[in-house]
Image (tube, rainbow, N blue to C red):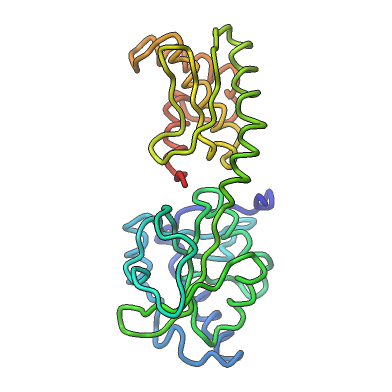
Length: 286
């Protein structure tokens, strides 16, 4: 579910740090009041941990009407403390995943965890998270939002945590992709005068799409889970390869013209094809 019109997720900036320290302090108070007496002991998360997350570009804030109401870290890739899990197993050990850490929200706010999860899920629908055994509030949220309990992991300092995971249903993605992607590809091919042979829906982790010399277009089933304008950009990119089997100047001129015609209002940056390619880097294949 998308965020409310007045709510956005963005990278953390240095000016946000005092507000984040307050959110962490409030979260710590809520934990203690609920009987969770040891999670986030001392001053953790502290300014140093936030600066470290910012340097890695994995720290985010949720802003509503100009006010920061939540924060979290979303880290794609392998989490070292998840390499070994005890008394259980992960739902899948091979598919790329992202981990949510250090999430906190304004006690007066609502739906902050849902906003965080929706934003992360759109970018990488295989999410792991851990929490303290006494953090009943977080465990209830994880259960509500479809996470499965997987087992026990241990942090670098030896502290125990309960581990959870939620994954996309790839077969459902495949079904939706077969309904949407070929039809959309053929509609755009007709609109822009391309001769298209066959459209295949593929599942791989190396590219969003490809084109063959036979006039066939291959589209990744993951396209159904990203914003429509990015999906159209990928399809336009592959259609351009029906005419130019390279990434030369003529290819990019054609792609820019098509992006401007179809998607010109989607992004303010120019050239559009570069802006869309940059946006696409924020999403991961599963």
